[in-house]
Amino acid sequence: MIGAIQQDSIVTDIQSAFADPKMVATYTEGPPRFVPGYNSMLSMAAILLAERARDDARILVLGAGGGLELKAFAQAQPRWSFDGVDPSTAMLDLAKQTLGSLASRAHLHQGYIDNAPEGPFDGATCLLTLHFVDVAERRRIAAEIHRRLKPGAPFVAAHFSIPGGDDERPIWLSRYSAYLAASGVAPDKAAAARKAVDGQLSILAPEQDELILRQAGFTGASLFYTGFTFRGWVAYA
Image 1 (cartoon, rainbow, N blue to C red):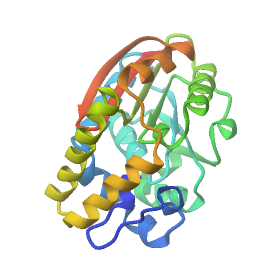
Image 2: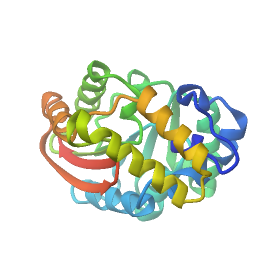
Image 3: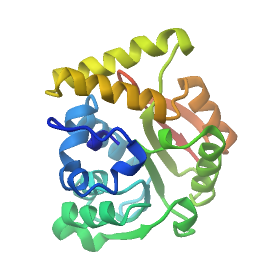
């Protein structure tokens, strides 16, 4: 989603952004600029996976379009292989380009969680993705990921998650808009991004996100990343 925000233009229909050729072409520039600590978050996710995943692990990456996390994980662990799933064919094509010579280690699948292989996998991630779906679908996705993991395997998730309920939500969204402006987005476009995020994404409180993980069967959920409106957890199947 963050790749839909550009210096010169903004795609305000977030769901359709991933079919926009201009957005797809420039997507990989977005997350490192517009998600606080994005590259460090990927490094931490790789470390958390490696704590329990074997040296030749098979990792499920849901929302793999663009290929940034696939590339980071492949570079961190030279013997890991990956199954990446994304609904956008254009974004999967971009993932192949991003991976370059590493592409042979990733099997890419067009679709959603139901189109993912059965596994069992040694670990899984879902980064900057779950805020696109409502609570019921988020529970189902988490449960389907859990079902595809080996017992005790790690799952790393990160997405929009705002504490404090309705009273604090406007404050945090304003901070998000201010961060975009500080990253070079024109103020009016940063404000439009704030409006799009507020109106189109399913953003829960951190305690609700952790409850969904427990309801899906995960244990030991712990927060490892916070970047203004974004939070990330690791939990175990």
